[in-house]
Amino acid sequence: MAFTLDIGQKAPSFSLPATDGNTYRLEELNDPFLVVFFTCNHCPYVIASDEITRQTAEKFAPRGVRFVGINSNSSNTYAEDDFPHMVERMKTHKFPWLYLHDESQQTALAYGALRTPHFYVFDQQRNLMYTGRGIDSPRDPAKMTVNDLDRVLEEVTMGKDVSIPKTNPIGCNIKWEGQHKHWMPADACDLI
Image (cartoon, rainbow, N blue to C red; front, top):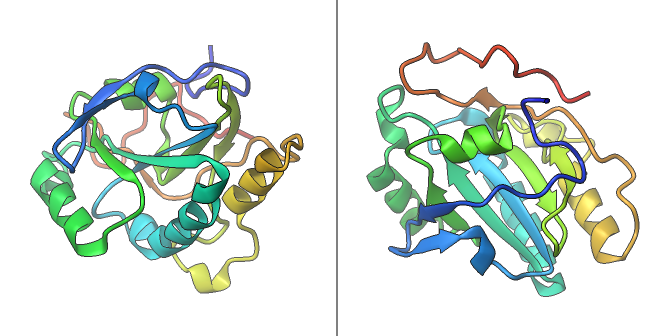
């Protein structure tokens, strides 16, 4: 089996605490479309592209698309990825998504998250329709030529098939507990 969820597979269940003080379960999120993305507080690819992600989330919210960010990074690798810093980041930036903490890293493993950011788009039955990058230049959005996430959400909210269902996520690797900061699981590989 591939490390990362494949197109058509079901979203793995989760129950994770959020920066708003609540705990959220996948099954409680009933929006027609769900974007789950693995993110963090420190990665320069995340920080530079967050405003593009915000624009996409705000654009598609009226069309029934819910965004859920998940931070699975070990705070032992980067202290600024801990939960208090997550809360502070959301207070400062007021992003239009839930920001969940996956301290055990079990959700990152279940989804096969490779990078921050790494996006997954699910339909209402929570079947995977897209996995990969948000944009093609997340570290320097001024050089962006393609916004894959916007394209995918445009297609699915218009009832069309996803023209390109997989891209390689671009960003920092997930910071796995007890591993070097650049370590990747042996079976983790590019999606295309």
